[in-house]
Length: 310
Length: 314
Image (cartoon, rainbow over all chains, first blue to last red; front, side):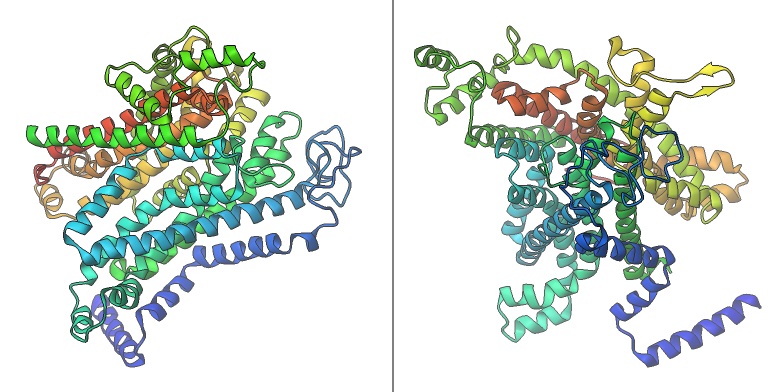
C-alpha cells in the first residue's frame, strides 16, 4: 500500500514536471542546490576567492613587509606555550621574518587559485577541441590522435614538468603551460568518448544534411552536447592542478619569494614546524578546505548531471 | 594472449623512445651545463673535459651516441657523483624506493579493500559515510601535508600510550629499520588507501546487485561466503586496472616522501640531478621510472585478461 501511494504521488509529480517543461540544466541545477555539501562548498569557496581577490583590504600588513620585532610569533589566541605572541592584529601569527601569515595565505590563495583556473582552462580548450575532433572525424585520424594520447599518457609527466621548471628558471608562464599540458589528456579522452555517442544522433545528421561544415558541427553541435561530463571533470581538475602547483612549489620549483603560494607556505612551515606549528597548520588548512570544496562540488555536479542514480 | 603480450611489448618500445628523446632534448635546451657551477677551470682543460664526455660534439651526434650506448644497456657515468656510473647509483637507490613502494602498496590494498567492502555492505549507513568521508580526506590532503603533520605528532611531540613510547624518528634510512620506514610508508599509502576504498566500494555495490549474488543468497549461503567467494572476485577487477596509475602515484609520492624523510631512494637523485644538470643521471632516473610505469600497466592489462574471461585481449 505504501509503495502504491508513493508511486501515485511520484506520478503526479513527474506529470507536473513534464508540464513545466524543465530543461536538463534546470533540473541539474535544482538537484545541485538540494545537495547541502555542494552548496556549502560553493559558499566557502566564494568566501576564499573574495578574500584572495581583495586581500589588501582585509589586512593592514603588506604581504612582503618584513618586521624583525615579531619573528615566528604565534597568534595571541594560540593555546600552547610559545616564545612570543604577535599581537592582536596578526590574526594567524607571523613567519620566520615577521611577515603576517594571514595576508600571505591570501596572496598564496591568489596564486594557487589563478594557476588552478588558468591551467584548467588551457587543458579544457586543448582537450575539448582535440577530443571532439578525434571523435567526430573518426577513422584513421581518430586512431592516430588517440594513439598519441595513449603514448603521452604513459610518460611520467610530472618529471617533465619538474625538468621544465628546473631548467627554465621557474618561469611563471611556463608553470601554467606545463601543468595545462599534463592535465588535458584525460579531458580529451572523456570528450572523445562522449562525441562518439553524440555523433550518432539525428540532429547531427540533420546539420550535415543542411550543409554545415565539419568545424561548425563540432563547435556548434557536438561540444555543447558533451558538456555535462566535461563540467564535472573541470571541477575535479582544478584541485588537481592546485595540488600539482603546490607539489612543485613545495620542492622549491614553483613560485619564488617574496611571492608565495600554498605549496611554498606549507614547505616553509614544515621546515620550522617544531617551533612554530601554526606556520604549517594554517596554510595546510586553507588548502585542504579549498580542495575539499572543489571535490564536493564536483561530486555534487556529477550526481546532478547523471540522473541514473535517482 | 601471447600475441597480445608481444604486441604490447613492442608498443612499449616507441613509448620509451619518445620518453628518451623528449627528456634528452628538453634538458639540452636549457641554459647551463654540468660543469658550469664548479670552480672555473682553465678553458683548455674545460674543453678536454667536454671532449671526454662528448659534450663538444653537435647535439644530434650526442643524441645518437647516447641512444647507441643505451641500446647496449649502458646508462653512462654520472657527471656529478665522482666514480659512480648511473647504473650503480640506481642500483643503490632503487631498492630503497622499491621497498617503500611495495610496502605502501600492500598496506593500501589490504586497508583499502577492507574499508571499501565494509562501506559497500553498510551502504548509506554511518559506516559507509564515515569511510567515504575519510577517503575524501585521504584523496584531498596531499602527502607533503600529511608527512610533516605526522612527523610533528609522532616524531617531535612523541606519543606515549600505556607506558610505551610510540615516538618515531623524524627521518633517515638507518638500513631500512622498521621504525624508520613506518611513517614514510603510511604517508605514501594514505592516498592510495582512500582511492582503493572508493573504487572497491563502487564496484562492490554494483556486484552485490547482480543476479548471481541473489542466487547465491537464495541458495542459503552465508553473507560472509557470498561476499568473500562470489562478490569480491568480481569487485576486485577494476582494482587490477588501477594498478598502473597507482604505481605512478606512489612513484611521484616517493619523490616528496624521500625528500621530507631524507631517504636515499632514486626520487632524491632525480631532483638533485635536475638541479645539478647531471644529464646522464637524470636520463637514467626518468628511463627507470618510465619503464616501471609501462611494465606495471602491462602486467595490469595481462592480469585483467586472465581474471576476467569476458575481456578479450587482441
